[in-house]
Amino acid sequence: MSATSKIMPYVIVFIGFFCAHAWAGGEMGEGDKKGDEGPHFFGFVRDEGGRPIADAKVSAAIKNGTTYIMRTPKTGMYKFGGLSKTVKADDVTISCSKEGYKQVRTFRRPAPKGKANAAVETDCRMQKG
Image 1: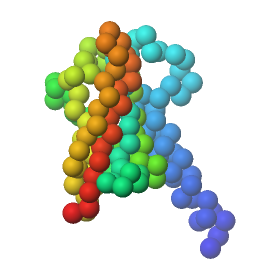
Image 2: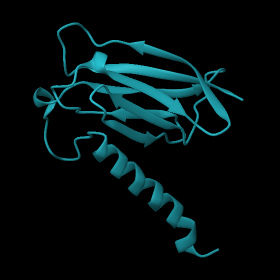
Image 3: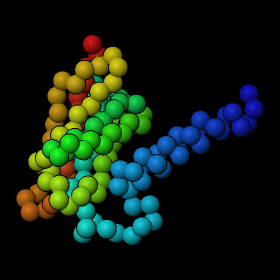
Image 4: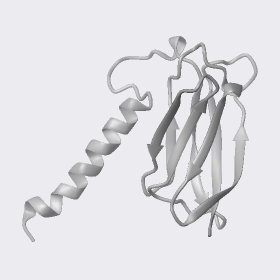
């Protein structure tokens, strides 16, 4: 196996993470825009035993019809950040899916009252089946 073929999977993962982070609202060197942003959503996709599920599809569906989708890394973590400040946290539904699993429960810890751009933690639990 050549050195290039050994390194390439890591390069692809890094590029994928960079693009997903930037697309999901990460501040890749753009300064702090938190005052101009709406709610942030983050959490983990885990199985019934609490183990992270890699490559799960996480969807953030906004009541207006817009849906954002991303995949989890091996840690099972996801982040959707910087949604429009016109979006209310209660108008966003987080759901998770992966072939061979079904979503059985969602745990949502709401942002503090009066903090429109605060982070809302939403964890998905899935079971094989």
